[in-house]
Length: 320
Image 1 (tube, rainbow, N blue to C red):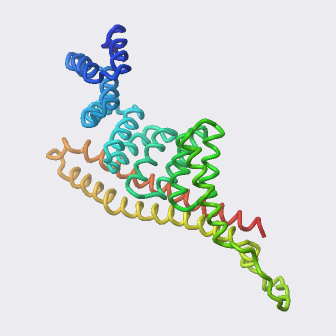
Image 2 (image 1 turned 120 degrees about the vertical axis):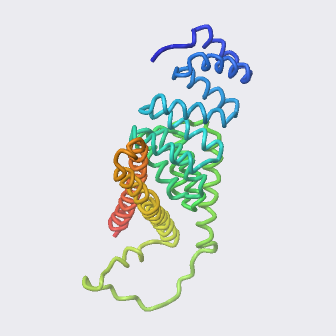
Image 3 (image 1 turned 90 degrees about the vertical axis):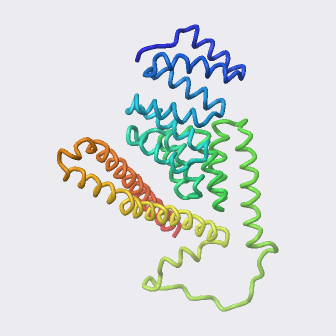
């Protein structure tokens, strides 16, 4: 990678950014980019400076240029996704991040930003999946624990939210946002417990129920062993899991119907044109590859949802 900016120029830019003099830093970098527009280092610095200055349209433009210059660089797509999230273009962010994940399936930053994008679209179940994927790649990502806990709290899964707030605080004890979130989650959990049994329990005299024979015993005996709080937690866990499955099924169906089939038809038509459509083959092929990747992502989310359901059933069985 060629270096365009001198050490003095880089130092000047950093000083200007540190002092909040964004316009001056951007002007300096833009003059360098005009002289050598194909320098990835200058484009990265320029896009980052625009992002810091909240000049999101410019940041988007420069990060898009960077993805064209370095199409194999996952970080270019992750940064573009972060800009689009900041601009509240969540659909665009999801698309950019999917392209990044095609380059690197173990990018915790890509999954983390995908979680933000899915939450921005209102798809909390997919946001949970994305944050869990980020933590699979990097269990020490404090912000992923925090954001996952926030979404779980929104979904009413207080115990899981408490778990991830505590995980964030274990790694960063002074994390004020996690401290506030934990206090709120614990309060909500306490309110839920109180709602089930505020005054204790009266015992009525009744005849003992005969024990079920082995033939009569079913999975319902497990449910009978749960107290009201455990049963409510079980329902919430099932709700979360089925929400992930429903979202993944819908996304998979839409991906196949609205993207993959359309991309395949367009590619076939272009190929059938022969020489007349030769100049479009590469573009149509890229559309097909991106549509296929989106379908594969949705399929992966569906499989993860199934695994969550199987794990839940196993946990219930182990209680019996």
